[in-house]
Length: 173
Image (cartoon, rainbow, N blue to C red; front, top):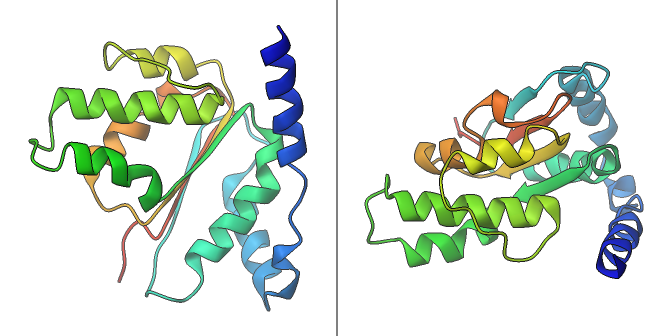
């Protein structure tokens, strides 16, 4: 019970709005446009993608939007190369469809999104069962591996109503 209270208070303290975005010229227009696409007023799972040339600010926009929206969701995660690097190092020699790699990725994903350490998943169907009643926010930055993407956010039915999955820099032109 004490751990639950501490976790809840910590989550709330971490969700104070960042003022990092105040100095970014034109970012408010981008945030407004993406907010319209995400339609937070709807009770359905949404997926929005950002793509374009390197260095035009996709990650910056995604991080600012993620920070602003996080407080509206029960679970939240910003997946970037750092999140994936350890798993990919462990399984770099494995077949990309390796069952154990997918289990590892999903366990790490679930632990992070729910804010609990070392959640274990013993079969791939568990992720959907554990998240289907949670409203979650998932941002994925610079991921172009379809197998990994499908392992983490494969189907909209995996997530509770009102969840958002956004891709930043998913594909570059």
